[in-house]
Length: 106
Image (cartoon, rainbow, N blue to C red; front, side, top):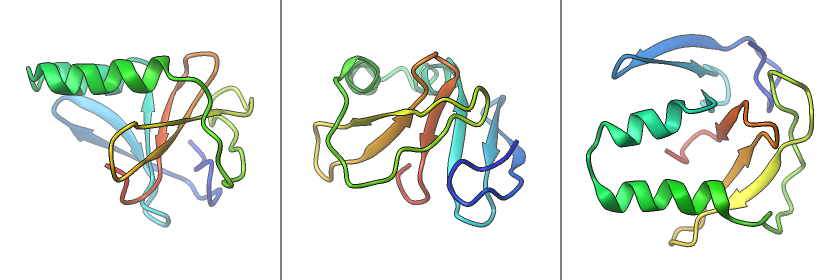
């Protein structure tokens, strides 16, 4: 898979039995649709589950960041933001293919 930020080839890493795509250049992480939720569900923390629901159901966030393309379907991803500080802008495929976290956002 190609990184949506720096266009480098990403590597597949396994974390808690979930295969993630990781960019060794810009340190970003791609979660295929449902993988982020699976990871957080395994934590068993209700607070974390609410955090995910907030991300997935929030309106598009205003951002100066360039819109990135989904590495699966190529469509421009929606910017969504956490409501907690520090505010994190997450790229989300509008077609449900996954979530992109820039390096340092996880």
